Structure formats: structure tokens, C-alpha cells
Image (cartoon, rainbow, N blue to C red; front, side):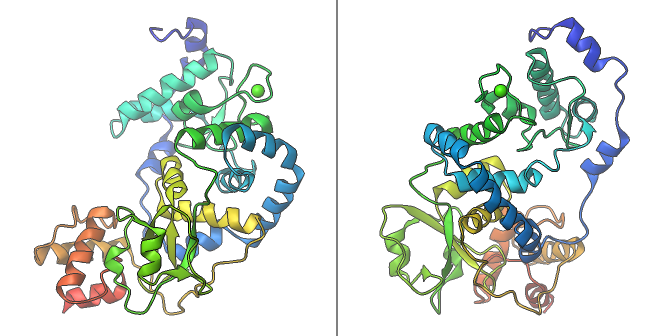
Length: 357
Ligand code: CA
């Protein structure tokens, strides 16, 4: 009530609400195996999604161009986010948003965060942008771009002028809201997201990290080229080399728009998938790097084993939780350096073998 939400809204939204057991189960779920880049990419950027994206880009081009002019985000990216977030509106979630948010605000694990999300959702209902019975993901993400309530509240816009910010049924609102969010997170439509590259023989993978940024001219001097061998573009732009599948996988040079995608979703795989899907929607082909046929999927137990063995050797990978986050990757790099291996920071079966020696 202190936030100006009318009692009648509170009553209709909260009367009889109970915790949803399934939401807690989904919140606690941990995958048994680590996600393999190639599997993620082939699932998220498949031919069907590319083909449909091309069709939708053509169909909605006039609207997408108007949105692009106002907010400065290229249409191919708006379609790519749409494709990844909800398969172009097919999957916007089946949970009661209020029920899910009440459950997660009640559960102690991330209560503070979800309490704020619940209040934001109630404000949106209070202001008439959505209804009490609104459906979304188990974590309360909503609409064609799966915005959490605070993102919806702060960045969604009414582009068709009917007074409501509708992220389910109004394509003008849907595209413009995504574009506004990206633009205010730092998107720059003079540039693309990044590109697949070819590394020179003897390239030191230690410089592959998101926090190492160099001008393209410097990467060019280090021998980095486009995948087909041509020079890098001669633009005044910083980039980082990233190796999402380790030294033997594909290599990318990513620009500042890639970092903006990480504001939207902090998964580095998601951010590559968005860029790659946008390129393919624009007529581009599949990645040129070849998937190795002997790739071994590590279980969480394997990753935890790597972490424990790193600790025993005096490196600090953080908790042995089976998740290879930034600390673990840094510790792996330090170990690899100490034994003169290519320091890509990537947890692999070869690395585990080496740590067992
Ligand atoms: Ca509207």
C-alpha cells in the first residue's frame, strides 16, 4: 500500500495465494552435466528458428525499421532476442506470475530480490499494464522477451499508443521495449556484436578473457584474423577474444554490444547465440569452426573434482560446487600456466587427467 498499490488490487492478487511447490523445485534444480557450447548453440540456433526469423524480419520490416530509428538497435537483433526468449512468442510461460513471485519472495533463498519483483508486478497490475492472472516463467519472467517485473517496469514502452505496455499481444510494444532496454543498457547500432575469428598458430590463450580488451588494430598485430583469413575491420573499436569451448573450440572477437547482451542475460553462451542468430537471420551461414567428434561432457561431479584438485595444489577456484564460474576459470588458467599448458581456463577431461597425475 505504501507503494500506491490500491487495496482492491492487493486483495484480488494476494487473497488465497499459496506457495507453489514446483517453483521451489525448479529453483533448486541443478543440471547433472555441464552445458556444452555446441549443444547449446545447435539447440538455440537451429535451421527452423533461422528460417522463421528471416520470414518474420521480412514481414515486420516497416515496424522494425521505425523502432530501429527511434532506439538505435538493428532489426536483426530484435528478431534474434525474440526468437531466443520465447521462440517468437510461442513460449511465454504457464505459471501464475503472482503465485510464482509470492512463492520465491516467501522462500528465504532469494527473498529480497523476489520481494522487489513481486512489488513491481503488483504496480504493473495496479497501473493497468497487465492483469492479475498474468502467466509467465516459474521465476516470473513475462511476455515475448521474458522480462522480469523490474525490467518490465523500468524499460517497457507503449509504442502503439494505446496507453498500455503490452508485452504479450502488441508487436510494436514488444519490439520497442526490447530496443529501449538494449539502448539504455549501452547498445550502439554503428557496430555489430562480434565475429567468429581464426587465431594464429602459437596464440597465447591467456589473453582470451572478457576483461582483456584491446583495439582491433592490436588484435590484428597479434595475428587474429576473420575466419576466412581476411584482415580484421579497420574500425576504432575495442574487442575481447573469447573461447566458449576452450582452446580447441570456436574463437570469437566480441565488441561492446556483446557486453550489452550480457546485461540482458549474463550467460556467455546466450550472448553468442543472440549474435549468431542475428547474423544468420541476416543471411549468414553456420559457424565455420568444426565441432570435435571426441568431445567429452563433464558432469558436475567432474568439475567439483577439478576444483578440489586445484585447491590441493594451492589454487583458489572458490567453492567446489561443480560450476565453473570466473574464479574457477582463473584458477584453471593459473594451473595451466604453472605446467606450461595453453592457458584457456577451460575445464576439460584432459585437464582432469592432468590434475590426477
Ligand atoms: Ca501499447
